[in-house]
Length: 137
Image (cartoon, rainbow, N blue to C red; front, side, top):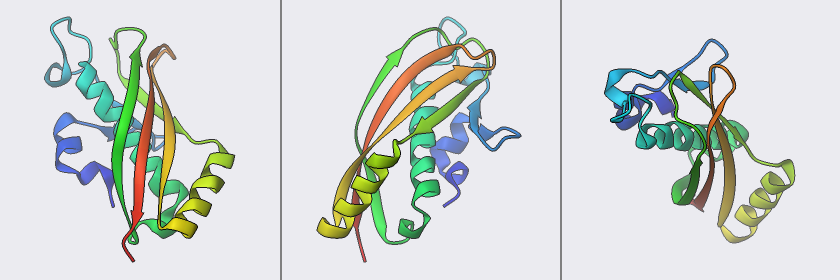
């Protein structure tokens, strides 16, 4: 699935930069009352990046599972005044644990950490997304 074709993601204006990393520009349509990037728009960037990482790490599961975001935590650190980029990660041991549980039970949870930074490297927020993955085939 092309993550940028999800209607809401497209509407918010997420793009991939020249390195193929998801980013969001500080444009009027995503601004809050302080002219920084709205918290909801930052959440959308981070959540979308977490889902894309799952697709990248587990391409063989794409047509065989339904991923659903179970819960999320986000801590805002600084206002996002410039274009922001999301950096998702999953420790390798957690990836292995997830795949084993999915094979054994047909469902599993996996935690994706995301750091959002502006173009100057300033962290605007840290996030944790917990995904529930259920086999369908």
